[in-house]
Image (cartoon, rainbow, N blue to C red):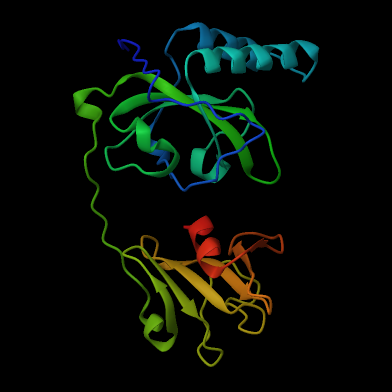
Length: 243
């Protein structure tokens, strides 16, 4: 791969891990992930770090050296979930051509080939990442637009719609009309436990469920989670987290 490094001191800003940025949804398709073969000082350190069998003093020192080098190369720090960014181990990395329509954490990387690296572990699926420009995306790798046909189940007409976007729909659960759910012990969403369901029109199925509390807060979880869920100030905040 022949790429000429691109740097812009005015564009990229490094955020300290102690001041984590808000998790914004920037889903990356696994089929778009490229092996990290860009040979530079960063890749050299990554290989040395990944060669360590144990998390010892040498590994900790290599991690510190990696972060220092990333900062010097104007990489951006952000937080995200492993199901969105696909690498979970510290030192895991890959290259990615950012589409021109991308939003969220990768908004400022549109049209660029970037490296994404996991640099911090966290609770559950949360991780700390850093990303930086390798070069401009090759012309044949630039994606300017993606067209999706979003479809929603027929039963949505039997439930009150609380939120709707082109892709997502949040429904107030009608206890008289069960919403069926794959891989659930009961095969449906329990209307006595959950008040709202979020449906992804891309998949055509529920992806998250919510419980409204008396103080206005909302408990939410993905339908695939076995944990009880997380709490959010409002329904909007909860929906935005699971979109």
